[in-house]
Image 1 (tube, helix red, strand yellow):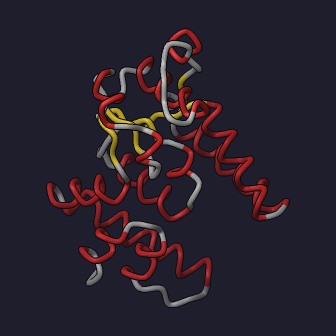
Image 2 (cartoon, rainbow, N blue to C red):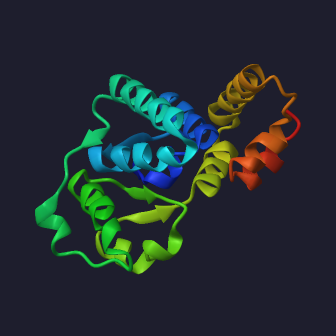
Length: 181
């Protein structure tokens, strides 16, 4: 399944690591555009100068690791689309142009299911999508979660639990399901 990842699911570190870890194990094919990545870098400025620098280094790693994931803008398609937030039309246009199956976002109101369905797409949220994958194949998701937890503990020096880490990362259903790992 090809899934276009909106900025809001790439920006948070734990969510991004969970999603791309599962994608690396064959869970789905991630897609994004240069504009989506630039929006992530600009959003990271809120964290200070080091936030933007960190985001840009992460973006460089993403581009190196996933060279086929970045898709070009699709202005011809974008011009014919309507979404509640006109700034999101590029996300839908890239998804259509890349023949994606889904748009993954946390902004449900900005991507109405009916509008996406007209283009042959579905909208998925990270928590629900990862839960579905975990229910279908726990070995696809659980090792990624364990790795992300270990890295969070190492980087922060804190004794994170799986449930607390994933819940904070806006993955509450997955957090509950994996709490005993």
